[in-house]
Amino acid sequence: MSANASEERFNRAVTAYLRQEVQAPAAAVSDFLDIIIEDARRLKLDHVLADLERMRSASIQLTTFVKSVTTDGSSAQGQAENFEAFQRRLRHDLRSPLNVIKGYSELLIEDMDADNNHPLREDLTKLRDSADQLLAQIDAIVTLTRSEQTPQESRAQQVGFVEDVLRTVQPLHVGSAAPEAALSSRVLVVDDNAANRDVLARRLTREGHQVVTAANGASALELVATEEFDLVLLDLIMPEMNGFEVLRRLKATEHTSHVPVIVISALDELDSVVRCIESGAEDYLTKPFNPVLLRARISASLEKKRLRDRERKFIQDLEQERQRSESLLLNILPQIVVDRMRDGEKVIADRIIDATILFCDLVGFTALSQELSADRTIELLSRIFSAFDRLALEHGVEKIKTIGDAYMVAAGVPEPQADHVLRIVTLAPRMLEMVDVVAKETGLKLQARIGIHTGPIVAGVIGTHKFVYDVWGDTVNTASRMESHSLAGRIQISAATRAALGNRFELEPRGMVDIRGKGMMETYFLKP
Image 1 (spheres, rainbow, N blue to C red):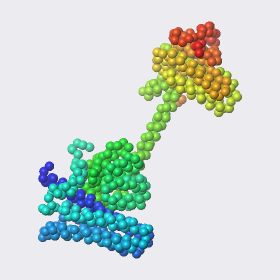
Image 2: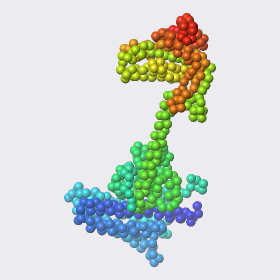
Image 3: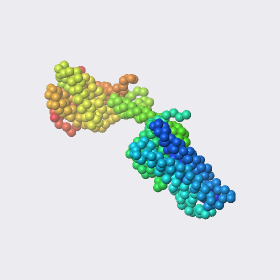
Image 4: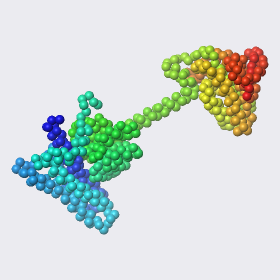
């Protein structure tokens, strides 16, 4: 970097330092006085108004003079004025109004010594302390003023943390990326200057906001990590961790990235503004800020956040509805069938070469339901069929439907399964066991019978408004007959199922059974 560029950058650092350490606190003192005067008028404390107005005039004189000194980061040293004379004048012009503010505040506090609960005592004490702190900064504005007697190295050391911020927010390389009432929200104010924090907190609280303050970047990050905020007002020039680093970390964390941040800084160069906005800041204000403008920016930021929150909530609700619809759809149709329909298939129909069908019927349930109330009947069926649903899911078979008090499942659909017979035959005994458990727990006479058959089927979706996945064919009819001709508490399988099953289960031959509509068929009972 050239000497001229370095000198220019140093001048900007000095100017920012003066705004941060003198001009911003001076403006805070003026704002604080406005608040105290408003309170005095509201409380009808007319006897203190004259002194408060004198202090207010002194604060205006102070802020006007400080602004003139910090306009370009240098002094208004006269041509015929040596440096020592200039320093004395500068110190005098800065200290005089502050001494007025401090003197009158001390007099008023003394008058209130007899009343520790005086409504203005605490605020006047804060005002006096702020004046003391600002007086301590006067030497800084004198020392940092350009002169041959102040080496650049010494000045650079005093504004080192300001220049650190300037380096952090230096420009990216080419190609990188009448006010309405404020909306009540929870706001975090981050500033290392106590007077700035207090004034902002007081003003925001008056406008209905809940305000939390943090004196440094680390405390701010801890607060945002554990509490919810609608807005962060962030000072940029802070020791240890500057505001830009706080902003970067907030926007890099998923939990806090949505929280809007308004940067309030003594740095007024365009580079700083652009970099903060590019890094996620909602807005940027320079110190000292206009309270009316700040209120408008806060309201705008909060309104945008509310719109974004509403949009996020709408998207979340849509996603929940989509998941709910997906869940309901999967309760009706198999996943692979749903996928095919989404891919544009209009007719879902498949011829399955080999599948196994199971029917289970609750024996005597029709008569039993006459003795039970409607609620008890539905509750009992729901308990049993819900248990069947869980078992079907565990065994990887497809529930087809319920027909009254009968339950139908299929294996090998909608996708082929080499072990479809085994899946159904291992499911069947567990279904009988479940019915026995419910019978013992309720004291009701409950039994089930099951029929199973294996063979080719047709499977597909019917309906346009109320979809249903179903299976058809002689295999389905035969499985239904196997169930109706079975015995209570037994599992009857056909010869086709027996052949496909092999010798993996013990079977009890039942012999030739006259299956209505099918003639004589060889069947077997699965041994318990």
